[in-house]
Structures are given as C-alpha cells and as structure tokens.
Image 1 (tube, rainbow, N blue to C red):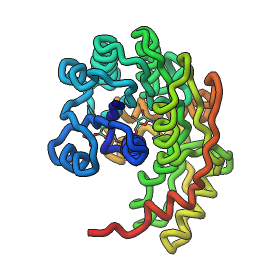
Image 2 (cartoon, rainbow, N blue to C red; image 1 turned 120 degrees about the vertical axis):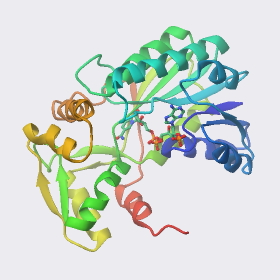
Image 3 (cartoon, rainbow, N blue to C red; image 1 turned 90 degrees about the vertical axis):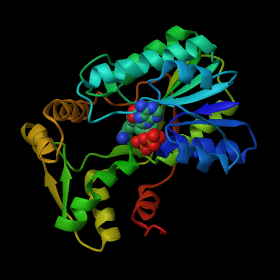
Amino acid sequence: MYAIAGATGRVGSVTAQILLNAGVDVRVLVRRKSDAEAWETQGAETRITSLEDQAVLSDALDDVAGLFVLLPFNLCADNLEAHADALIASITGAVAAQQVPHVILLSSGGADLAQGTGPITGLHRLEQALLATGTIATALRSGHFQEKVTDVIDVARSTGIYPVFAASADVPLPMVATRDIGAVAAQMLLSPPARSEAIDIIGPSYTERDVATMLGEGLGRELHVAMMPEEAWADALIDAGFRPHIAASLAELYRAGEQGLLAPRGDRSIRVETSIDVTLDRLLAPRAE
Ligand SMILES: NC(=O)c1ccc[n+]([C@@H]2O[C@H](COP(=O)([O-])OP(=O)(O)OC[C@H]3O[C@@H](n4cnc5c(N)ncnc54)[C@H](OP(=O)(O)O)[C@@H]3O)[C@@H](O)[C@H]2O)c1
C-alpha cells in the first residue's frame, strides 16, 4: 500500500494515477469527501485528512510501504514559517509513529540551505526532520515547474505583457513538467532506494523570453517581455494581491534564484524530457465542461 498526499494536486495526482494503473494498492489522502469519491471510483482507498492533523494522518499511514508527501505553501498564512513548522511536526510525527519505511518528499532546489530562499526554508527543515525519523527519505528537488507559467497566462492574455522577476530574460533555466516529477515519484515508490538521498529533477532549459514567445504563439498574440527590477518585486507582488510578509518571502525566493541558490546540489540528478510546448498546449487547451 502506498499513501499519496496532495492527490488533488499536479504532482500527487499523477503519482497516484500511475500507481493505480500499475495495479498496486493506493491510499490517497484528500481533504474533501467529493475528492475521496472521485478517487474511489478509480479504485483507490481514501482517507480524509489534512496534513496538519497528526492523529488522523498517522492513522492514514497505517501499514504503508511508502508515502509521497509535499509541503503545501499557504500564501494566505499569517506566518509562513509557523505554518510550515506545524505541517512539518505533524508529517514527521505521523511518519515516525507508523515507522513508514520510505518517504518521497516533493522538495526543491535550494532545500539544502537553511536560509535565504523564502518559502523553501520550510522544505529544508522538512528534509532534515524526515531524516531524523529513521525513514528512508527521498527528497525530489525540483527546479521551476513549467506550470508556473499559469500565474501569468491571464495577464498575458488580457494585456499582452509577460512580466519577468529577474535581471535577465535570456538566461536558460531548467523547467520541469509536473507530470514528469509525478512519474519519477511513482517509479521510486515502486523501487525504493537503499538509503536516503536528495535527487535533483532536471527538465529541459528555457529562457523566460523563450517561454514568452511560445506562450504568445499559444495565445495568438505577441507578448512584450516586461522586466521587473529587483527593487520593484515586493511592491509588484503586493499590487498583485499578496500580503507584505508573503511578498517579502517570494521576493527572497526570486533573489535566491538570481544568486544561483536554487541550483542542483543533490546527491545525484535525474533528467526528464517533457518540453514546455507540450505543457503549454495542455494548459491552454479548452476545458471540457
Ligand atoms: N512551483 C514551483 O516551481 C515549485 C518548485 C519546486 C517545488 N515546488 C513544491 O511543489 C509543491 C506544490 O506541488 P503541486 O504543484 O503538485 O501541488 P498543487 O497542484 O499546488 O496542489 C497542492 C496539493 O496540496 C494539497 N494540500 C494543500 N494544503 C494541504 C493541507 N494542509 N493538508 C493536506 N493537503 C493539502 C492540496 O489539496 P486540496 O485540493 O485539498 O487543496 C493539493 O492536493 C509546493 O508546495 C512546493 O513545495 C514547487
């Protein structure tokens, strides 16, 4: 039995689906009855729990061979650090209580660093805390998700502007399709490694200008790449609706990217192939009602 958190999310949903297709027992951890019902029709066992609820989470991890887990960011939290720490205590408490043999954490480049990376510092603390439980911890350290482009699709469509929070739009950066991460997680649950490790998941590289060009083609309009200078990041994020402490944390994350702090530094890396035009086609495809 494999337990999958974040099963309504981009990565966890793929991991759960691949495992179900492989014919193994899957227990998805979801927060709503309607989500549980949708997974049950596909043959999954379900438990309704939030990751903060250590007692229910612990019950849900009874007798599992492996767990896929993530540290969801809550960009409405009054205190990002405290929110992350409550999740970390609950997740690791439940993993330790059930002596879960193998945990795959959806982590991030930069999670080896204790500070200076905005919300990724929570992933650093979760990686460390999982190691302390005695489980075999596999930290899948992803670079930028290709799906991050979703954040700018509406503004690009309506204004023709593609905002870039970086000093240059011409630096190639690896970008990973979340489906590829989900597939790696499923594979690693089925073939657990002998020891804990941090694995960088590296996708194809693109510049922000490449992404703007491809997104413009998909939207049927040319996009103007608008560079945001670093001193304007926090205010632009506040204008976009984020509270000041969240904007400050995200600005620190962008700064970390500029300083190379999010680069791959794990024990090894896995290269994945899905190209961003495939992801863009999927994101821009009309949805069936
Ligand atoms: N964006 C990037 O470029 C990037 C790069 C590296 C790593 N990451 C990591 O990727 C994570 C996001 O992964 P994703 O894109 O697969 O997720 P996602 O699509 O954003 O979905 C989040 C998932 O987490 C669940 N969730 C949220 N809060 C929860 C809680 N308190 N208890 C239980 N479940 C909860 C959601 O369930 P509901 O449906 O119930 O809300 C949903 O299934 C981030 O947290 C970050 O750590 C992101």
